[in-house]
Length: 333
Image (cartoon, rainbow, N blue to C red; front, side, top):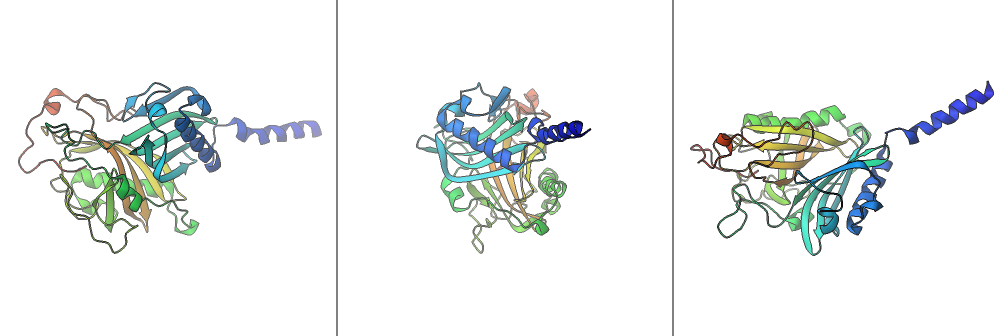
């Protein structure tokens, strides 16, 4: 009897090590190891699973290629968040490719102490804007500012337990943002009146919480104006926010990582926008939105992750470069 009790207790004690659960400490260690392996350009230095899958801006990348070769170090902004419920962790900030800064969101999934997924959204200084490139090869209506992101970074924080919303509540508040954009009605969005939005580091609306009392930013090229993150949606060139995912909900920080795709209005020549967005939520309201985004060509499947409901190529009649309907010109995002 005593022997069976001892054996049973020993087996129970071993279960956490054998199971798929990865707590915050485990997730932190895994993300640290992963990024260090990237900087060393050595996939064998990370605890990768057999069948590890990685995409960069929705394109599948062979192990050891892409960021494994180009990324060299963390830059001026380094934020990391963890979700033990989903078993996922993510980095947001500046990653350097040699001397050139990029703005990146990097998500990993950990199962049985092995990293099974790596999803990268990388914004570089030169990339296609919402209207592609001009005749000189310059991005059209494209935001990028690692220096501004360094001035107004998203918070790395631990919110007191009594002030935290549940995981479900945080997702619902975040989803109200996408619903309001789809409905072209900012009143649907549960947002602070000064809610800010930074796209690839550039402030395009509102006042970042790191700049209390500051003035709203000037209107950016192709932008919606100087209002909050919930304003100016009436004529926003979008028909739907598709492929919504919420893989990392850090309840300690009250910050949500969401992915989605902005689907343009039929006939619009503007590109879709695929993105990872970070939502900082305070007092039941969205306070800041930080987006890492890119504008894929019309025939590229995005997001290239389950549930794949944002995947395309688009039908020819939607992908063809027709003029936008009157009053529905291109807008930032």
